[in-house]
Image 1 (cartoon, rainbow, N blue to C red):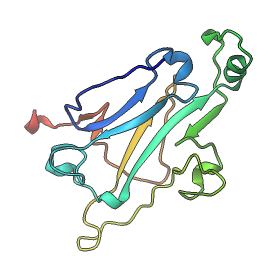
Image 2: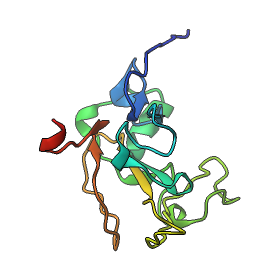
Image 3: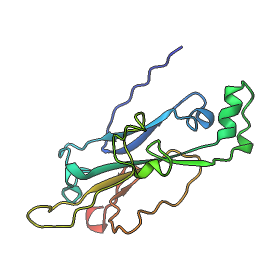
Amino acid sequence: GSVTYSFVASRPGTFIYESGTEPAKQVQMGLFGALVVRPAMGPNFAYNSADTQFKPETEYLILLSEIDPLMHQAVEWGQPVDMNKYLPRYFMINGRSFPDTVAPNGATWVPNQPYGSLAHIHPYNAVDNPYPMLVRYVNVGSHEYSFHPHGNHGRVIGQDAQLFQGPAQE
């Protein structure tokens, strides 16, 4: 059968969509994705706030997921899945595991996972590069792991699709 979902994207942000039937099993097996809702201010803003402007050519999405191969084997063999024994052994970024995570986008040997995890940083320059890059981090794994972009300094502007606002904006 099939199911149709509909929703209204009432606010900008980065969201996940996932299976609504057996999420504990099906999300872990790949039935998920990311959805970016653009703000009314334009595609070069993360939110409807002037201080969230970024350079659109340097926007990246990092989608974290995990795989428990024994769970996949149980499904393949038609056996029941015991989520109490769930133990992920593979950790993915944009559908790739290392070393393919650092391969270039569109690498021919991973045609079904076109995007890697490399974010190309360009130094600030008032004329040539006045706006920062934007990296959207999304975790669809059942466990939360710390994720650290080594060697990069950044400013967190939002979490859970909510813009962080200071006291003057509350």
